[in-house]
Length: 386
Ligand SMILES: *Cc1c(COP(=O)(O)O)cnc(C)c1O
Image (cartoon, rainbow, N blue to C red; front, side, top):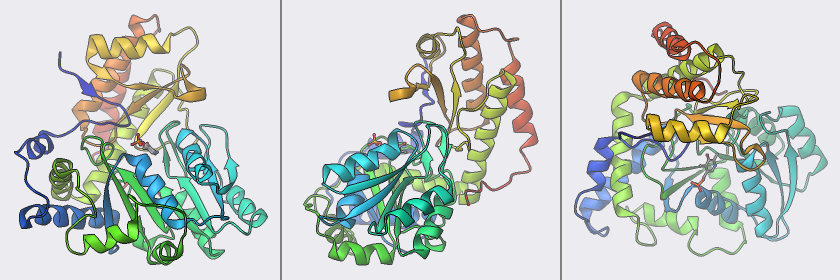
C-alpha cells in the first residue's frame, strides 16, 4: 500500500531529496562537498531571514536545543523557560541536566503564554539572562507569540532562544529583523528531509554570550563550528548524505519561493481546520500553528484505533497525543511537502476512519469543507507569525 506520513515530524520527503541522498558517497573534505554544504547553508540563512551563520549539526532537533543551551549558559546561571507542552518542558529538562536553575512560566497544554505572563517572570527573576521558549509547540499544536515575547525580553537585556523546530519553513521568522537571539530547528519537519540534522542560528548578541559561556561542551562547541563553517567545513565528519538532501530541499524551497512556501502552509492549515470544524471538532490549541492541527478525541471514540485504521486501511499516518495528552488528542501534521491534494487525502482518511469507528458524520463532510477552503484560498495571504 502507498503510505504517506502526516505526522508533525518526521514528514514526507520529496523524491528530489531522496534522489540526492541516494547517490554514492562523496568525501566531505572536497570542493564538491563544500560547494553543496555552503550553498545549502546560504539558502537556509536566506529562508530564515538572516545574515548570520547557520550551523548544521549531526543530531536531531533536541541535540540542536542542547547545543544552544550549553553554548549560552554558565554554571550558576538561572534561566526562564516558557512551557505549555512537551517541547517547552524539554528546555527545562536540558537546562536542569546541566545544573541550571530554571524558572518556569507554565501554561495549560493547548494554551499559549501571554507576553504579560512572561514579563512578570522576568521581573520576578532578574538574575535570569536567558529565556527559552517553543515557537510552535508540536505536542499541542499551539503557536506561541515568540517574537513579541522576545521583544519584551530584549528590552530587559534578556536573550530569547526559540525552538523553531516546527516553525522553520512554515512561518517567515525574519530572524535578523526580530528580537530573537537564537533559533534551533531540525531536518525532519519543515525542511522535508529525514531526521538526523539539527540547526542553530545565533544573533551577534548570542555569539557574544557564547564566547564567554562556561558550561562544559565538546562535540557541540558552536564557536568552533562557526570557525569551521567559514571554510565550508565542520569540526567532525558531517552527515554527508543528509547534507546533500538538505541542499536539494532548500533548493526546492527557493524555487517555490519563500512567500509561496508560507502561503501553502497557511492554505493547508486552513483547509485542515475547516474540514475538522465541519466534522464538529474544535481545535485543541488556543492559537493554532500552521504546522499541525490538534483536536480532542471525541467521547466514545477509541483514538488509538482510529490512528491505527488510518494507517493500516488508508495508508495515512497521523499522530496521537504525547505524555498527559496520550489517547486524548489527534495531531494531523501538514508541515513540509504537502499540497492541496494531500490535504484532501488526509482529511478524507480521517473522516473515513472515524466513521469506521462509530463516529457519526455524513461521509464527504470533511473533504467538501477542505475543498471549499482550498478554492477560497487562492487569494493567497502571507502567513503571519508576529
Ligand atoms: C520534533 C521537535 C523537536 C525535536 O525533536 P527530535 O526528536 O529531537 O528531533 C523539538 N521541538 C519541537 C517543537 C519539535 O516539534
